[in-house]
Amino acid sequence: MIFSEISLIEVLDLLGTFAFAISGIRLASGKNIDWFGAYVIGLVTATGGGTIRDLLLDVKPFWMLDATYLIITGVALFAAILFKEKLLRLGNTLFIFDTVGLGLFTTVGIVKSFDAGLPFWVCILMGALTGTAGGVIRDVLINEVPLLFRKDIYALACIAGGFVFFLCYQFNLLIPVVEVLAALTVIVIRVVAVKFHIQLPILNLDHTDAKREE
Image (tube, rainbow, N blue to C red; front, side):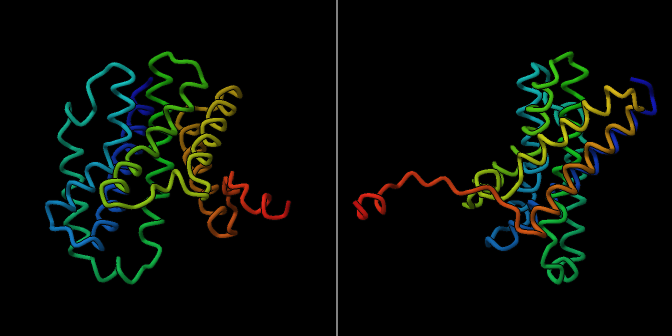
Protein backbone atom coordinates (compact mmCIF):
# COMPACT_ATOMS: atom_id res chain seq x y z
CA MET A 1 0.00 0.00 0.00
CA ILE A 2 1.23 3.50 -0.76
CA PHE A 3 1.88 6.05 1.99
CA SER A 4 -1.40 7.95 1.56
CA GLU A 5 -3.37 4.72 1.87
CA ILE A 6 -1.48 3.71 5.01
CA SER A 7 -2.13 7.16 6.49
CA LEU A 8 -5.86 6.86 5.88
CA ILE A 9 -6.22 3.43 7.43
CA GLU A 10 -4.20 4.59 10.44
CA VAL A 11 -6.52 7.57 10.83
CA LEU A 12 -9.57 5.32 10.63
CA ASP A 13 -7.99 3.01 13.20
CA LEU A 14 -7.27 5.82 15.66
CA LEU A 15 -10.69 7.42 15.20
CA GLY A 16 -12.32 4.04 15.72
CA THR A 17 -10.27 3.54 18.88
CA PHE A 18 -11.45 6.85 20.31
CA ALA A 19 -15.08 6.23 19.32
CA PHE A 20 -15.21 2.73 20.80
CA ALA A 21 -13.36 3.84 23.94
CA ILE A 22 -15.95 6.57 24.48
CA SER A 23 -18.80 4.11 23.96
CA GLY A 24 -17.30 1.71 26.50
CA ILE A 25 -16.65 4.45 29.05
CA ARG A 26 -20.11 5.93 28.54
CA LEU A 27 -21.77 2.57 29.15
CA ALA A 28 -19.57 1.87 32.18
CA SER A 29 -20.60 5.20 33.74
CA GLY A 30 -24.00 3.81 34.67
CA LYS A 31 -22.58 0.70 36.36
CA ASN A 32 -21.03 2.23 39.51
CA ILE A 33 -17.51 1.66 38.14
CA ASP A 34 -14.53 3.80 39.16
CA TRP A 35 -12.24 5.72 36.79
CA PHE A 36 -9.75 2.90 36.38
CA GLY A 37 -12.50 0.39 35.75
CA ALA A 38 -14.01 2.71 33.16
CA TYR A 39 -10.59 2.99 31.49
CA VAL A 40 -10.31 -0.80 31.34
CA ILE A 41 -13.80 -1.12 29.87
CA GLY A 42 -12.97 1.55 27.29
CA LEU A 43 -9.68 -0.13 26.41
CA VAL A 44 -11.26 -3.56 26.06
CA THR A 45 -13.98 -2.11 23.86
CA ALA A 46 -11.44 -0.39 21.64
CA THR A 47 -8.91 -3.22 21.37
CA GLY A 48 -10.84 -6.45 21.91
CA GLY A 49 -11.92 -7.04 18.33
CA GLY A 50 -8.55 -6.11 16.85
CA THR A 51 -6.76 -8.33 19.35
CA ILE A 52 -8.77 -11.39 18.37
CA ARG A 53 -8.25 -10.52 14.69
CA ASP A 54 -4.48 -10.25 15.10
CA LEU A 55 -4.29 -13.53 17.02
CA LEU A 56 -6.16 -15.23 14.19
CA LEU A 57 -3.78 -13.61 11.71
CA ASP A 58 -0.89 -14.96 13.80
CA VAL A 59 0.63 -11.53 14.45
CA LYS A 60 1.28 -9.62 17.66
CA PRO A 61 -1.78 -7.64 18.78
CA PHE A 62 -1.49 -4.08 17.51
CA TRP A 63 -1.69 -2.40 20.92
CA MET A 64 1.40 -4.32 22.08
CA LEU A 65 3.44 -2.65 19.36
CA ASP A 66 2.14 0.90 19.74
CA ALA A 67 1.20 2.63 23.01
CA THR A 68 -0.91 5.16 21.07
CA TYR A 69 -4.02 3.06 21.61
CA LEU A 70 -3.55 3.08 25.38
CA ILE A 71 -3.04 6.84 25.29
CA ILE A 72 -6.10 7.46 23.14
CA THR A 73 -8.22 5.47 25.57
CA GLY A 74 -6.90 7.67 28.38
CA VAL A 75 -7.74 10.78 26.36
CA ALA A 76 -11.24 9.38 25.80
CA LEU A 77 -11.66 8.87 29.55
CA PHE A 78 -10.64 12.43 30.40
CA ALA A 79 -12.78 13.79 27.57
CA ALA A 80 -15.75 11.89 28.96
CA ILE A 81 -15.07 13.26 32.45
CA LEU A 82 -14.55 16.85 31.29
CA PHE A 83 -17.57 16.90 29.00
CA LYS A 84 -19.78 14.53 30.99
CA GLU A 85 -22.63 17.04 31.15
CA LYS A 86 -22.81 17.26 27.36
CA LEU A 87 -22.45 13.51 26.98
CA LEU A 88 -25.25 12.85 29.45
CA ARG A 89 -27.52 15.37 27.73
CA LEU A 90 -27.09 13.48 24.48
CA GLY A 91 -29.21 10.41 25.06
CA ASN A 92 -27.87 8.75 21.92
CA THR A 93 -24.18 9.36 22.71
CA LEU A 94 -23.46 5.66 23.17
CA PHE A 95 -25.19 4.82 19.90
CA ILE A 96 -23.32 7.49 17.94
CA PHE A 97 -19.84 6.52 19.11
CA ASP A 98 -20.56 2.80 18.95
CA THR A 99 -21.86 3.11 15.38
CA VAL A 100 -18.92 5.21 14.19
CA GLY A 101 -16.47 2.82 15.83
CA LEU A 102 -18.27 -0.13 14.28
CA GLY A 103 -17.91 1.26 10.77
CA LEU A 104 -14.29 2.34 11.14
CA PHE A 105 -13.07 -0.84 12.82
CA THR A 106 -14.89 -3.04 10.31
CA THR A 107 -12.97 -1.34 7.51
CA VAL A 108 -9.65 -1.64 9.38
CA GLY A 109 -10.25 -5.36 9.91
CA ILE A 110 -11.06 -5.90 6.24
CA VAL A 111 -7.98 -4.02 5.05
CA LYS A 112 -5.57 -5.79 7.41
CA SER A 113 -6.95 -9.19 6.46
CA PHE A 114 -6.85 -8.25 2.77
CA ASP A 115 -3.22 -7.21 3.10
CA ALA A 116 -2.51 -10.60 4.69
CA GLY A 117 -3.67 -12.26 1.46
CA LEU A 118 -6.82 -13.89 2.83
CA PRO A 119 -9.86 -14.71 0.61
CA PHE A 120 -12.50 -12.00 0.38
CA TRP A 121 -15.06 -13.92 2.44
CA VAL A 122 -12.56 -14.34 5.26
CA CYS A 123 -11.75 -10.61 5.10
CA ILE A 124 -15.44 -9.79 5.45
CA LEU A 125 -15.79 -12.03 8.50
CA MET A 126 -12.60 -10.62 10.01
CA GLY A 127 -13.95 -7.12 9.47
CA ALA A 128 -17.16 -8.03 11.26
CA LEU A 129 -15.14 -9.64 14.06
CA THR A 130 -12.95 -6.56 14.45
CA GLY A 131 -16.02 -4.33 14.60
CA THR A 132 -18.15 -6.35 16.98
CA ALA A 133 -15.96 -8.43 19.32
CA GLY A 134 -14.83 -5.50 21.46
CA GLY A 135 -18.44 -4.53 22.10
CA VAL A 136 -19.32 -8.12 22.99
CA ILE A 137 -16.51 -8.27 25.57
CA ARG A 138 -17.57 -4.87 26.93
CA ASP A 139 -21.19 -5.94 27.35
CA VAL A 140 -20.24 -9.22 29.02
CA LEU A 141 -17.98 -7.43 31.51
CA ILE A 142 -20.74 -5.03 32.54
CA ASN A 143 -23.40 -7.73 32.55
CA GLU A 144 -25.36 -6.60 29.50
CA VAL A 145 -26.76 -8.73 26.68
CA PRO A 146 -24.33 -8.06 23.79
CA LEU A 147 -25.76 -6.03 20.92
CA LEU A 148 -24.48 -8.71 18.58
CA PHE A 149 -27.00 -11.18 20.01
CA ARG A 150 -29.99 -8.88 20.02
CA LYS A 151 -32.42 -8.38 17.16
CA ASP A 152 -30.77 -5.11 16.08
CA ILE A 153 -28.98 -4.93 12.72
CA TYR A 154 -25.38 -4.95 13.93
CA ALA A 155 -23.05 -7.61 12.55
CA LEU A 156 -25.05 -7.69 9.32
CA ALA A 157 -24.15 -4.03 8.79
CA CYS A 158 -20.48 -5.01 9.01
CA ILE A 159 -20.95 -7.79 6.48
CA ALA A 160 -22.72 -5.41 4.12
CA GLY A 161 -19.81 -2.99 4.46
CA GLY A 162 -17.45 -5.83 3.54
CA PHE A 163 -19.36 -6.62 0.37
CA VAL A 164 -19.34 -2.94 -0.60
CA PHE A 165 -15.57 -2.88 -0.04
CA PHE A 166 -14.93 -5.74 -2.45
CA LEU A 167 -17.54 -4.59 -4.95
CA CYS A 168 -15.89 -1.17 -5.15
CA TYR A 169 -12.47 -2.81 -5.31
CA GLN A 170 -13.57 -4.80 -8.36
CA PHE A 171 -14.38 -1.51 -10.09
CA ASN A 172 -10.77 -0.39 -9.46
CA LEU A 173 -11.69 2.55 -7.27
CA LEU A 174 -8.89 4.13 -5.26
CA ILE A 175 -8.31 2.21 -2.03
CA PRO A 176 -8.91 5.27 0.20
CA VAL A 177 -12.28 5.77 -1.52
CA VAL A 178 -13.12 2.10 -1.06
CA GLU A 179 -12.23 2.27 2.64
CA VAL A 180 -14.40 5.33 3.24
CA LEU A 181 -17.36 3.87 1.33
CA ALA A 182 -17.17 0.63 3.29
CA ALA A 183 -17.13 2.47 6.63
CA LEU A 184 -20.00 4.74 5.58
CA THR A 185 -22.04 1.73 4.47
CA VAL A 186 -21.80 0.17 7.92
CA ILE A 187 -22.65 3.45 9.65
CA VAL A 188 -25.58 4.31 7.37
CA ILE A 189 -27.13 0.83 7.56
CA ARG A 190 -26.87 0.86 11.35
CA VAL A 191 -28.40 4.34 11.63
CA VAL A 192 -31.22 3.60 9.18
CA ALA A 193 -32.02 0.29 10.88
CA VAL A 194 -32.33 1.95 14.29
CA LYS A 195 -34.21 5.00 13.00
CA PHE A 196 -36.83 2.94 11.17
CA HIS A 197 -36.85 0.06 13.67
CA ILE A 198 -35.63 -2.50 11.14
CA GLN A 199 -34.87 -5.64 13.11
CA LEU A 200 -34.30 -9.33 12.62
CA PRO A 201 -37.05 -11.73 13.72
CA ILE A 202 -36.58 -13.22 17.17
CA LEU A 203 -35.89 -16.95 17.12
CA ASN A 204 -38.65 -18.74 18.99
CA LEU A 205 -38.59 -22.52 19.01
CA ASP A 206 -41.08 -22.84 21.86
CA HIS A 207 -43.99 -24.94 20.60
CA THR A 208 -46.04 -24.51 23.78
CA ASP A 209 -48.69 -22.42 22.06
CA ALA A 210 -48.95 -24.89 19.19
CA LYS A 211 -49.41 -27.79 21.62
CA ARG A 212 -52.13 -25.87 23.44
CA GLU A 213 -54.00 -25.34 20.21
CA GLU A 214 -53.86 -29.08 19.50
